[in-house]
Length: 274
Picture 1 (cartoon, helix red, strand yellow):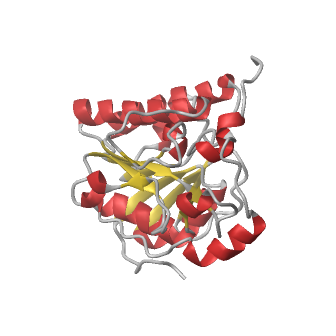
Picture 2: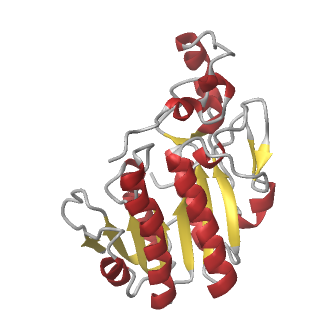
């Protein structure tokens, strides 16, 4: 069941990365909020349901992205590389691609973007620290670097052109937390919907960075500077704690995966040039 009441808020809403894990979750949950949901991905999106438009567009293709944003009221941008990878695909999708997206938004008159950033923008903070959106970025890999670029680019497009963006530093959005780290980073699917809808509907979004997590007892992230967005998580990782601790009874506090908020991402790469 949807976590929010159906209401038509937009004429045409664009969801990129719609064939991915989170895109699949939001595909069903965003439709009640718009007359037309335009879905984009390079992977197979299946058949268009009522009220859906399917568009395949490579983010690095300037003309294709410009056409993709035609007639769009707002964008939920999940598209691009979503894991640590060699630099070449990250450059194309997450650097050139996000530039193309904002240029297309400017040219097509789109005034609000919800940008899927990542907790890996700050992955090299320790797990015994609590940070907020004003702490300097500390990416834990090339993927995190690319998301930091997207946050900075979106800030420029707000300051120069007035395009509002809420940057979602998404934690671990899964049906349930898998390990001790996720007791802090977990974001339920229902709370993901609440978060995205809040970002789309806040009266004034400006340029905002918000950490995407549920109402977890263990928390490394402080959303004090995003209170105006109106996101109120209703789920928590706490009901899963006993099972997680049974599966993972001890943690090696000398292991970088345990020390840093980025978890396993601090061990990935470097990759050979491609």
